[in-house]
Length: 319
Image 1 (cartoon, rainbow, N blue to C red):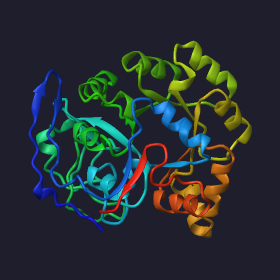
Image 2: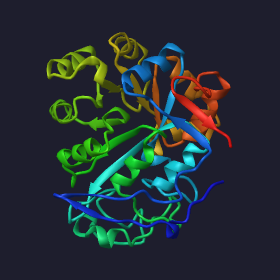
Image 3: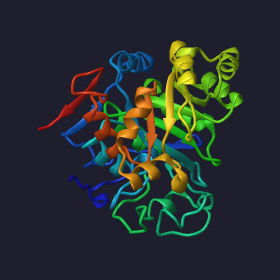
């Protein structure tokens, strides 16, 4: 298992209007593991996978595990040593305008800090240490969005969730600065938000909850082309008919098995029925958003539904 000491890394902040960029975090660029290089057209990448009957996993909050906290570049790098996965992250903003990865509004659950996260400057946040999901303190500090985006180049696709403190415009500026529109998926929770994100980043793909053909028609009417949409179809029961409608319109299908105590992930883990991931994929799901990326991927591998080395821009470097 590869582990990276944060102490080996250094961060250099450079002011850029009301945002900030950072240097790479040295030591994170492993020479081994999976790579997802989608190329210049993310939709074509997903079409390639769909044509081959393959399903990707999306690692919720970057795929935390024992010793590896959520929303950390080091954790995502660890996941990619074992599993080709899209990485879902949460982007928050410090009190002085630095974009960084954090899910909660408060610090207690995921760090050794306390209080409201939005009251702290980046200089204060970067001194914190992250805790894993079992509450154990790790060696890792919070990651900036700029570092996560730079790390992901040639390695994976980032699925970006926006926290309440974060302006779409600031995230868009960083994505443009790193020429990353074709390797991100932007998460929207309303038609208006999706339309705004499309105006800011017209080449980026947008994940939007789509529960019917009417929802899709409204999204397209708002100005978002079918081929820039991914339909998030919920976390409860798979709906093959809806999946078929979306796939027929060149809209990628995301279904979530995540969700805490009442999730499909938890049910699968308790029953030891990992084949259920395969059953979900076979109903027309292109991306399974999960808290169990390793188990879901392994089940897809056993069923021949996971991408192999050399397929659709996905590769595995072993030495």
